[in-house]
Length: 189
Image: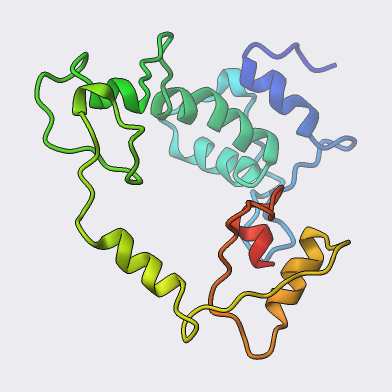
């Protein structure tokens, strides 16, 4: 009977041990890579000396592609070290970021031009003439056409129609937010 595992790693890896005959095979065996020789057993984890390169090398050959070992290493070592979390989360909306609460002076605020800016920033300063230019292009029959859709359409049928139209469409302006329930990738497919 094998002794009870003395470490968390041993308990996690215990189900991965091969059963019967005491044979141990490398996780890479069968892939053309070097396996740990059968006549050189791997010492139990609680007797392993990390400074012994030969012992660590044999153990590495056995465990390096074992999903349980990889998962344990990521969860116990990598993630806690490199993805630390805080108990308190600082958050702010556009109102706070653009307002005087966080910063006494602000030199700009990015986003879609609208009058929904933080009150401390005042009214949006639109570029003179840009709205007129946009409306001119969007109402020019040489640039834009309107295509009516019969009743009974679905999001999929509308997208199929756009994708297979002749002549091809260059853009779809969904002014009524008709295409819902799909992300950019779903629409593209």
